[in-house]
Image (cartoon, rainbow, N blue to C red; front, side, top):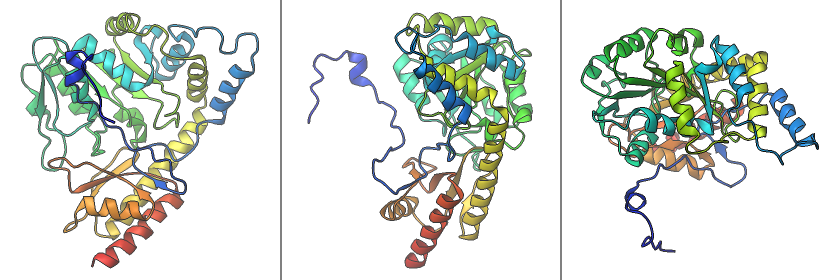
Length: 365
């Protein structure tokens, strides 16, 4: 059906929306295309949400707590921060949208890598933010020297998406120090999959730099993608701006179930650490198996790997895998069109991927 956009605003007509990873409805697929956690969420998180539903006195008939204070305090305690240094929203995508609206709608450009989370240019277009793309190096790492130029903001995913590469914390410090009058946003959606997350995460820097914003999500390492909870950590002055923007746009972003489930997830430290460690082990094993098949795999600190097979078209491999019921992500974009982004699955899912790839390559060769 064709769309009649005569009543749309000029802005709506000119938008180029973000295209999320496919969510197929077919059964028996090995789904390795959207970086979801291969393990279920904390049982304590599920119990906390069930308790909300079973409470007939309030259940879901009442509005949720508008500032999510209990969840924010739990996150603050977990990271050794104050309540006024924590912000939460309806998924990290909403948090990032508010970040763009609060800090990047200025005169000078926003700097970002040429290969990164593909929602950033969409936000920039939506909010009228001028951007400047900084090319990654040939090995897909970030060269912070290239960011030493006039700007009103910088946004980096760390680990980067879709490459999985991690920028060292010392480079992040140098980058922030370069731009004391611009907001630097480090999107840490995948940071929990770094081998040493306490050293890798920049959350501990927010009291050292008042121009730093860290965003994170419950969708990956905490296996709550279906709940839609994201957060930001920053100086209280920056958090106040996010609060003001949120309350001018969506004053009750997190429902009662989301607040309860997310809070319990943070409190269940043992479960989180166990599953985080298991995914890291699976990632390392998957990397080795792909390398055995001849793939070149970038160093990854995320719950996915970014891999290319010399003398083979990634699009052809992606299609051949799909025909066998295995779905991975292929980006038909310059510089990365020969790569596949493969989410880390369970051991059985990863083995199915390797078995199918082995069959495909045998036929191709």
